[in-house]
Image 1 (cartoon, rainbow, N blue to C red):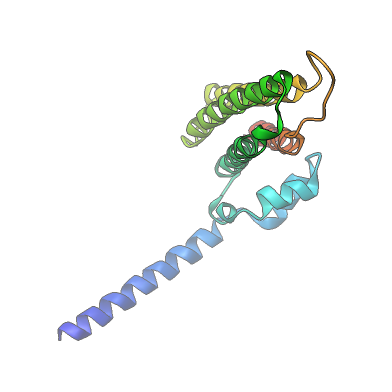
Image 2 (cartoon, rainbow, N blue to C red; image 1 turned 30 degrees about the horizontal axis):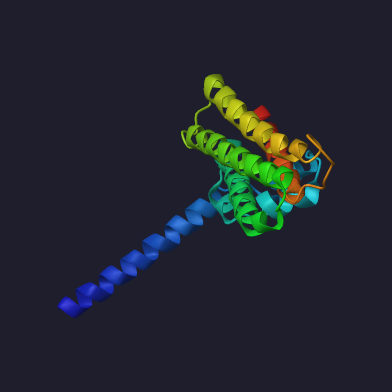
Length: 185
């Protein structure tokens, strides 16, 4: 009798999991809507890569749910940039290079804090204009910090190519996507 109850319970758990999976799929944003959204961005392929292929999109029912994806992806880019800074720090032996890389580390850490604040507000899934403005402010503050790092490579001495340009461009594109989503809320 106990064995039959355990088997019955496992069946019910499996059935419930299947129903929840199908229910979440049926309420998800259609991929065609996501593709149309990405066509509105400056970089369709980039948008589809970072937003359209994200696993969290399956659970996103609307732009409010989708908003957390580019903010999270931006945080990942910032974290990867900080890792890159730590990996390349030893390449800069002169004072100017050391100062530039130190400033970039500070700016990317500041950007990470700003994007985290935006993410926290976005988690509320609020439709209030105050929350949207707060997300926009924090996203802009994070982007401004990343820009200050990028600009530093052309100041205070000979111009150098920034070793973080890849991350700068990704942050720029993700911030544009975030702003576009906010405009649709």
